Image (cartoon, rainbow, N blue to C red):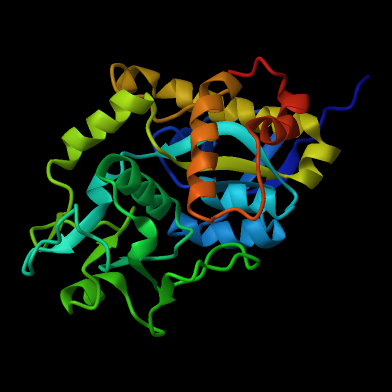
Length: 303
């Protein structure tokens, strides 16, 4: 008589989204794994521990943080699963009580961002350069934190604000002319998007690129991939089932949950190129190099 298989217990960090809610509640399960979720709020506080010392077996991770971790040789493996994506042009804001900066004349202006390597900041800069011809190196980028990878050093045109500073008070005080915020974007009339009709501008960007800018992906440790590929397959399958569970309510909308190698290939290649243009990576990366880490486990047909 065979002995029942005991699931491998995995320490995990994922934000609660509509597509991860059932998984985190235990309503979606797999006999191969037991996911024990850490309470991390906001979720970006899990990123440095995961990228630096692989604090979790499975973790959500900002795409820029993952690419930097890969480039610096950290033992993390990307699963072809996007769990957060967002149109970005409404994330660049200014204080409506002050003069609105001219999008065409941002050279010499001060723009605040939590960290230069923040994924939302990377996307906003890429859009400013591509769609509005903004010379990124001529802006004074002001940060309040360092990046998730300790090895990374900001470019010379980036300045760290004094300890204890926060972006919105700096914006109110005129210490920066504009600021980039992501999940912490404020509501209300006090702050407004710098880009006029940001939603229409996002639609124009989407028309050119045909994907929603990627914010967060899912990674596992190299140790887990090496020791228990079955557990990695189970984790990916659970994530995919979570995506499928919200497919009906997302029908007809731009797909923010790209899964599988085919769907991710071109968006990931462009993301890498943007990171290279902005000095975020210490070496060249290729999509093939990245996919190879998990393709041997999931197979190249993973959807």
